[in-house]
Image (cartoon, rainbow, N blue to C red; front, side, top):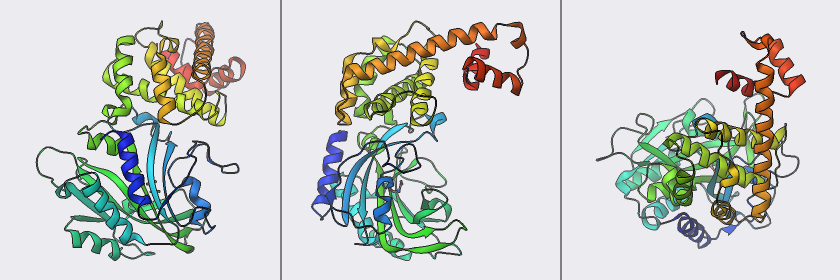
Amino acid sequence: MNTEDVIRTFVEYFEERGHRRTTGSTLLPPPGDPVLFTTSGMHPLTPYLEGRPHPLGNRLVNVQRCLRTTDLEEVGDLTHLTVFEMLGTWSLGDYEGPRSLSWGYELLTEGFGIDPGLLHATVFGGDDQVGLDTASLEVWQERGVPVELTVEDNWWDNGPTGPCGPDSEFFLWTGEGPPRSTPTRDDRWVEVWNHVMMRHRKLPDGSLVPLPQRNVDTGLGLERLASLLQGRTSVFECDVFTPWRRLVPPLWPLDEATLRLVCDHLRSAMVVIGDGVRPANTGRGYVLRRLVRRLLTALWRDDPSRTVGDLPDELFLHTRDHFRQETGLDEVRRVLCEEERRFLGLLERGRQVLARPRFRGPLDEEDFHYLHDTHGLPRELVVNLRQQ
Ligand code: SER
């Protein structure tokens, strides 16, 4: 089952159960939202979870692209991606958690053919504000799925204030042999789907008040599920990375972790540019700039003559089509190449400045400020150049 089949199966399953697919899945949050990029499937739906009626009704399904920079240092391992897609479903004050979990169980086991014996669930165990989630616990007990109770790991919020609630998560066993232990004790249990019973709002003083309606918000990482269904433990081995794995190594021989980082950052940069962002020194543009500089730094470690200008069109096309974007290939390539040229120029200037006697010894805060303010050299770049 490739990722397109996974999306189709998921969306159709929920459409058959009265959900409407929401349109639009850009990485850019709506105007007025303080966050730079959409970080989860529920993000654009926040006003509707808080009670505003949604024009498509109270059962929704969607595929939402998300960008997370909190995990940037983890990219290169088996599971982290900067830009990824989340499949999601929402009950806006309609059905409650048990029905959502039952449908989720049926879709995973019957729709996607996952062996029920490889599933584990986690459920909110209760704290001094909200009690044990007995309704979810009963769903799992009826189906004979083992359950682990946790407190922090089964509470979902999107920041210090706003909609939040207890959640119940599906885990899939990825180890050799029969399942062992529990999700919090053995990381061969991989989280695949989170169902949040979103019925509270957290106030700045930490107290909870009920939302005007009882919602369910679920989210499932597309690439992670697709990899597991394809029998892979690494997201970089699922079908969305097939052209990358075929075309990048002959161009640039890289070790596995660097290959993953370069492919992730390049693909993410293409999507961000496709959604209309351009490199800049602040905000979204700075996130894009950082991604490009990180990947070029990794790429040039062994061979400074490598250039993103050599990337085949197929990679640009594949990314654009997968994310259903419209920005022309030449434009995306032009932005990447121009940013590469700018970075090269900055590195050259940095090397010249750092060769001055004043900067031979250890640098203090004043030096970093001077290098930044007078020569436009960011601290990260200065540190990198001094390590070379
Ligand atoms: N909001 C939850 C998450 O991001 C479920 O969609 O995991």
